[in-house]
Length: 274
View 1 (cartoon, one colour):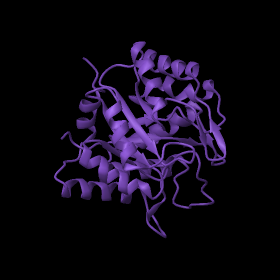
View 2: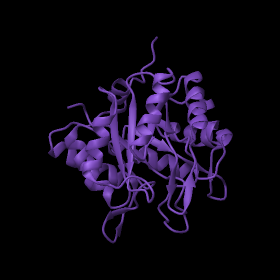
View 3: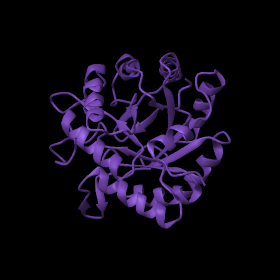
């Protein structure tokens, strides 16, 4: 099997610092968490950022400030910017970090009820984000919350707005999305184009179980505070690095080596031609 690519989603857009004090908010906090997660074995840092009030923002200057802070630590992980932002943000807001020409960005491939809100991703918005990524030479990772989203992603691929090898992240366990059932993970993994890269982001307590199954199936794994703030039932995780380190240990026990950031660049097709 390919080496395991671990993504650390270190912050997200839903949790507040007041509710969970280890959550990194400031650029310095984000940089430390990113460095520690990379040092523990994460090849990718999935990045959301916050404004000075601790609220989610897609402001490109805020993204640049956080990315510069991460880079200054010596962290060499792939930075994957979020274009999902937070529920209710406009397409123009969500597109901003792509203009910084990062290597990698998330691309949500469909709408869904998201808890008590609705996360709107109509075809024209998906296409617009994909076109912007194409223009800025940014590789998209399709975020899949249910099987129909794969069909939306394939439409983007068929229009030539994404290049092989294609990348998919199956986000399972969001209230309103596909249930975190191992059968669903297998179904989704078999529905994407052959030779695609795929991984799973299990929400809450499902992060560990689905991550283990993904390792065995040859998929990749996302962990981190965006999706889960617990290490085990009733015990908060101390850091994103703690969650990364557990997946490293499990994967090595199963005989599957961990991808470095350079390994991941080769696997994902992020290496630029000279």
